[in-house]
Image (cartoon, rainbow, N blue to C red; front, side):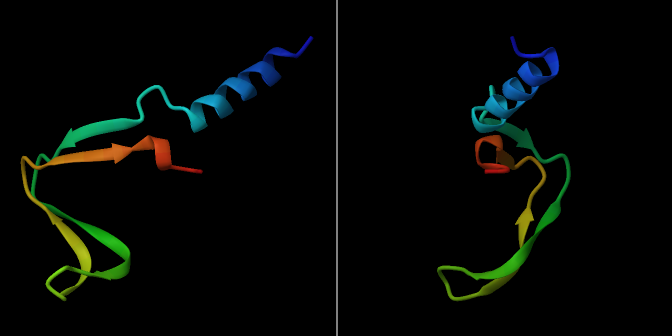
Length: 68
């Protein structure tokens, strides 16, 4: 029989790969910017180092892709 600590570890690992809430929508409460680790080029050819976020904008965080 597995110990309670081992069972807990298995449950946590399962939830890490298959979260109960794969996405969590958020609404920005103020204007802000999301800094990028690496610059990206937009479709217009502009190099972006951060993404502007406007107050009231809907943002989805995806827990399903974290720590994989």
